[in-house]
Length: 112
Image (cartoon, rainbow, N blue to C red; front, side, top):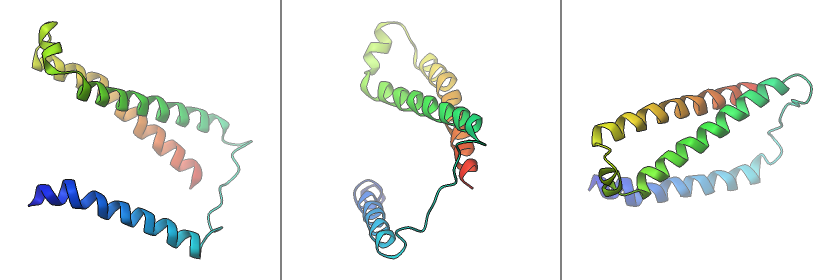
């Protein structure tokens, strides 16, 4: 029952909230958000935050895609044990995740 809720019903609920929020925002506060200009004062923060976030996200997504698409038999055939697979996944995934979170924090801080 919980599996059906989490993997079947919950995504549709989230998608409906997403669409409903956009419709509400368009109807009631269309021009409410403005962004501060970052042309002169924050170029270095933008560069550092953007690079960290985008490279981190690329490596995170790439690692997940490789983990999903490459079968376990391929790793076994080239002699990589399950333990070594997890060690490599953590050692490459953790820095990528940390970089993307730090980049996201920097980019969010610029807008607050």
